[in-house]
Amino acid sequence: MRVQSLTLAAAAAAALLATAPVVLSTTSTTGSPGSPAAPAREGSVQAADLLARLQGCDPVSHGRYRSDDGTRAEIPVCGIPGAVHWTADMDIDCDGRAGPLCNSRTDPLFSESTAFTQSDGRYLSAETLPYIVVPAPSDIWNFREHGIGPGSVAVVIYRDRVQYAVVGDTGPQDIIGEASYATAAGLGIRPDPRGGGTPSGVTYLVFKNARVSPVQDHAAAVATGERLARALLGDG
Image (cartoon, rainbow, N blue to C red; front, side, top):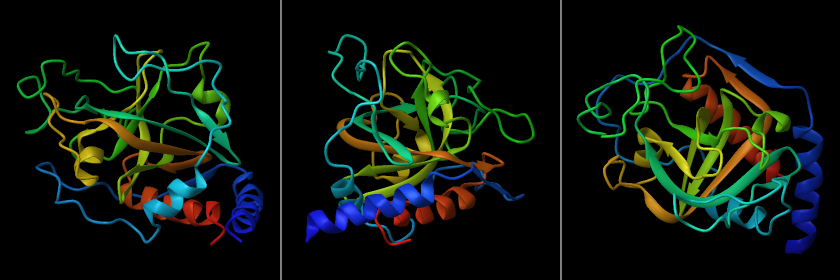
């Protein structure tokens, strides 16, 4: 029965997700600067259900990624109808607009810019906006060829927690597994850019052709991510 239900879920997801881009236009923004709130479950989709749906890997990358400099390239980007996913570590991205938690004093590798910007042209705030980092396009994998770009909706899964996010920055061409301070905090992962993060066990799911606008509207990312995650599980 489990195999049959997953087959039906995949068919339903393919029908719903293989559509024109989803763009939500709103005017709200994320919370005010400061320490992110204590982890709270977003939505009702369960981490275990998503992980069961993402078992196995049909690679869409032409090679594999490293989790960090000096490690072996062992991480593929996998494809399912309407989405891509990978499981890796989580390094902490504290780049972008400086605040009390992310700045040149708290992060020795701090950069004032992110690859993508808010609707007002300012760089993203890693400490307030949950976003993930995708590898810069290369011969290994080009995220743009899979309907992914700034504001693409993502779901990040760690243990029993689910955090909705957007694609907000790019990283090295050969390394994968990084997300913003706010994403880590939402998952209960230590968000300190100096030695925070976790070495393994984080699953990143990114939906194709599904973006929110403005990119900083986290409420829109949650609503869209929850709807698409339910569709992926056959509950939509």
